[in-house]
Image (cartoon, rainbow, N blue to C red; front, side):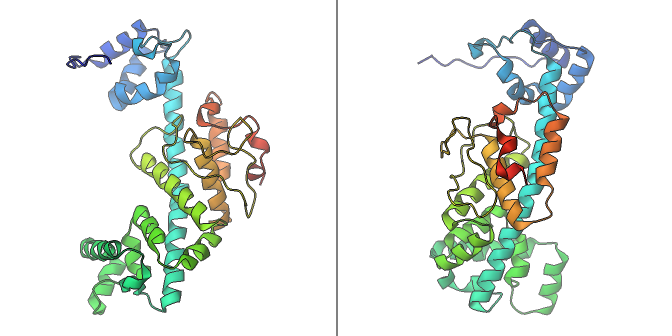
Length: 309
């Protein structure tokens, strides 16, 4: 094991940062523009995008021949726009999950206050934490429909179709996983064209991707640490494979293409008018220099049923 040492690197001006990158082999079309980019994005953030252009061994931080700063910045811009497109798409899935939970459980218990029933949930601690979270959210809410409710009614927590609007995607997912009656999970999953266990895996993945988008982190060439299971029995157009080996896999090495396929399939079930497919394809056309193989796109992805719709 290499012995650790004290970090002693000193901060550099943006001009010095450009000079360092040039010394390491990165080419610049316009150094002044590069300085402005580094002044607004930061060396450290951009380094994730030029990493694929570094020679082996990577620790020496020497660029491959022909590597250009402008190419790195194009990838950064593409990644930024990809986050926006995905974030909007995932929002629609979140809203659909919220709507389905509210509808099915309110119908089952014939009450908008079904969440106050401990028997609705597998875990008593979860039930207590949910009520606490709803109480805090209602107290802190500035939403007019919550304020209006509290001015008129006795019950402190509004019915689920009002109070659940204050809950995060992650909390909604926790509610779904903690429903005591598996029949309700099955009914909700059916709306998304999935087995309930597959839906759990897929929602887990897209929440992970959504959090990356929300924190403005890199999506382009990441490996998914939370990856979706393979869909064996699709209810609508799907894909034959999401890797170039020609085999469906649950491998933890899956990349963004698998999450993009999952998002598209779910949107096909929750919003027949969605534009995600078109927006993604338009984005790829806008940035032809992007190597989408780094995202896990297969060589034949355009011919897959999911993308021919």
